[in-house]
Every structure is written in structure tokens, then in C-alpha cells.
Amino acid sequence: MQVLNFDIEQESWMLEGACSNLDSDLFFPVGSSMKAMKKSLEAKAICNECPVKLDCLEYALNTNQDSGIWGGTTEDERKSIRREYRKTGNLINY
Ligand code: SF4
Image 1 (cartoon, rainbow, N blue to C red):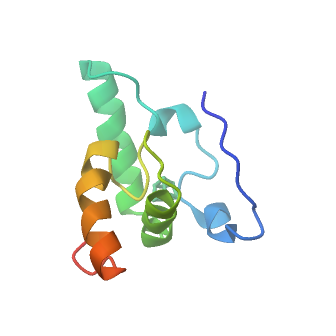
Image 2: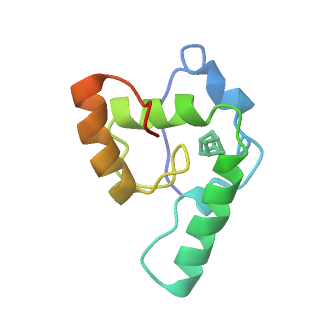
């Protein structure tokens, strides 16, 4: 299980996340096995219904989260989103 350091007062959106009462392991699938891919898809489906999805993605981009599902994206997906985000400062196309 990954331990995250954050200031809950600054990151209060986290309390509203659809995952706030779920096992965080679901959002940190390990490897590329079928089981890990299934976990990843399940986590992304939860993110897609989450009211703070963009806050979450922006946080992940700003803090260089390089593992796990954040804002409905995998680490590889965030790499390409990050390039555009750094150029434009927004997530309009996301
Ligand atoms: S977008 Fe996904 S990972 Fe982020 S707070 Fe919502 S459910 Fe959790």
C-alpha cells in the first residue's frame, strides 16, 4: 500500500472523491497482469463518476504522481496529458 503525504486542508477535494471510502489498493494496480488491468479499469470507471475528477487529475499533474490511477488516468496517460498541461495550463481537452 502506498502512503501519500498531503495537507488535507489544502486538498479538501480529496474528501469528496468517489474513492474516499474505498480500498486505495484498487487505484494502485501493480504490473500488467490481467488482474491488474481489471483493477485499473474498475478504478477508472469509479473516477469517471467522481465529482472531483479534474481536481484529482490536476493534483496528480502538479505533484508528479507517477503511479496509480488519478483523475481517471494511468501514469502513461498522464505523461502525454502533462506535456499539454505544462504548455497551456489547462485541461480543456481532457
Ligand atoms: S478521480 Fe478517481 S482517484 Fe481521483 S478522487 Fe475521484 S475516484 Fe479518487
